[in-house]
Image 1 (tube, protein in one colour):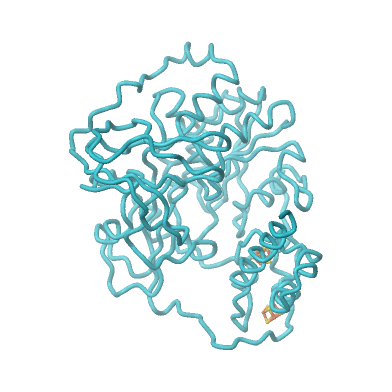
Image 2 (cartoon, rainbow, N blue to C red):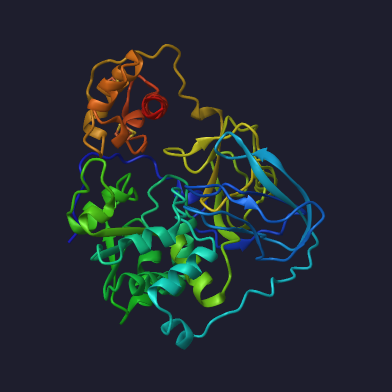
Length: 439
Ligand code: SF4
Ligand code: SF4
């Protein structure tokens, strides 16, 4: 049974640009810039130096603590280890590889048979997933081995997020249509780690081909495909848990507090590849779409490919007004297209000037529409007021930290108040105040 979460919106889906485009392998670029920071946690320290020769899949960065390694996505020569622009707006240490186009595979990469995988313990599987550099690929980039190992004995339900509710983005849709057995296989590995006989895949009813393919692949496996009514943000973790189980994650809590674990469909493929193929996470499907693209595409892209090259591969009909890492609701605007794809980059959206909704000195009309739209049952209008006042205690008291930055409030606001930007600033203020209080 599917539950309908509170609030949400129905933005124009714009999936038609790319949804019928099969996944194509992007020709490997001559130069790749691989950031050492692609996950939540400690950034990797480079394990290679300038002029080193690297092979495809070789580990080139790692660190202690909350961390997963990064790997070379092509074979070639290290041209530099230096600070480079990152999609998060900062510059981070990166390994720049000159591609030799030889595709020389790292000798450590060895596939495993089904029997070998069946013989592995949950701890061994988690180690393999860590060494494969697997993170949440829906955007959060939290290390998957930590999420799974931390939920052993606590979670009774695992849900694969194949919701993909953001407009324009079709990478998970194509993955589920074209590689459903691999998605199910990765989920079965995660179920084994958690000791579960049953698993769920949540997908919206606007992706009937993907849902049918997954159902077919899931026959006899214990995997249930839950087809949910399309509503944004169905793919948000807490909303998906409610939609599938009816359980509400408490304010400030994690899914495991209600016995749930959520992993993304692309993460399932990365788990499968790491465990069965011995192949670390070095490439992913990226939807390159938008209303000004001449040829939108779903591309299998090596990690470290520049946004510029992807834009050139698809062509644009005008200079973009906005380029987003992600989709128009939650994506982050990019000002330097030399930034490169990372593990959590599922889409790049190129929007034209007709998407300019900026209003100088926007004023709240007190219509309350943002309150009705908020899936977290927050009061965006009051949160914005608290942010403007700079009163950190007030911001905390109205639960700004619970905001998932889904953009429903901003989408529905007739006055175009920049609500989400305000909440992002407010969170920085709250975190800075907490850090200052610790000193
Ligand atoms: S961005 Fe935050 S406040 Fe706005 S609707 Fe989403 S969760 Fe609610
Ligand atoms: S939707 Fe916009 S105008 Fe209406 S109450 Fe919220 S912030 Fe104010």
